[in-house]
Image (cartoon, rainbow, N blue to C red; front, side, top):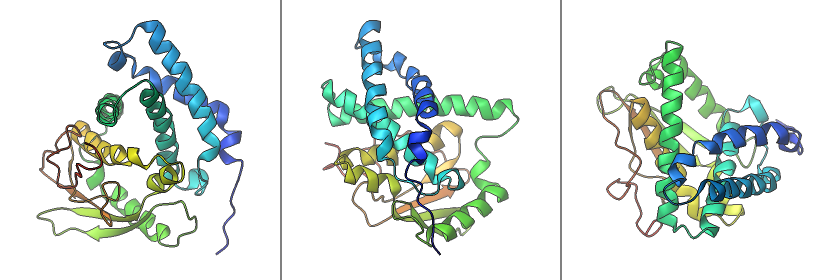
Amino acid sequence: MTVKIVKDYYLKRTPKLMMEFSKHIEVARNLLISKFSDDKINALFTEMKAEYEKLIPEIPYIGGNKNSFTSLLVGGISSLAIFYVLEREGFKLREIGEFYIKFRDINNTIRKRNLEKIGKDPAQYPFESVYIDYAKKLCETSKLRNYPDDWVADYVEGDGRTFEWGFNFHECGIQKVLKRLDAERFVPFFCLADFSEANILGFGFSRTQTLGFGAPLCDHRYVKNYETPSGWPPDDFPEFNKNLIP
């Protein structure tokens, strides 16, 4: 099957992406206020916006809004802009990781409240039949490898005891683009953000290995009646590789 690559997909959407990013980084203000003045934070935000605008053309096309992984790529590149600025400001890799998980905790808390406002139970969505069916279709489509920069995953049926269902990711779109940009050192933070989501939203999630920490795959497992740990500190996680986050 021949698929169309839309080369200017993100460029056409730059104004909207920049507007969303400007709102997004405001959440980080309270995390930076202990280190910097308001004026300095505003200057850092200006740098982050400039960095993101430069990076937007680097986001690979994987099907646009027809592919739900597109939002992960956009989020990954917007986070990379933040990482670059913090790194230039003197943050060590581990400090960037801690900052990022706290940042994601805040965003996930906002998401949780928004879901609850519309009558959704954030702790149940991974176990709903509609979401599971969606995950199965997503995995089947991924194995067509229509786009070289996309994710590739298998759906894993659970045993109903140790886990309900899961993904085995063999290729990761964020890892691919960050490797191309010589920024692979930041990939583990996106892995750890999965724990932030599950911990804050309240659903059970476990994993023993990830591509980001140097393993051959990511074995996501969704588990009922399990309390997911916070995403930071990560040192006791089975997937953790201390050589990547000293």
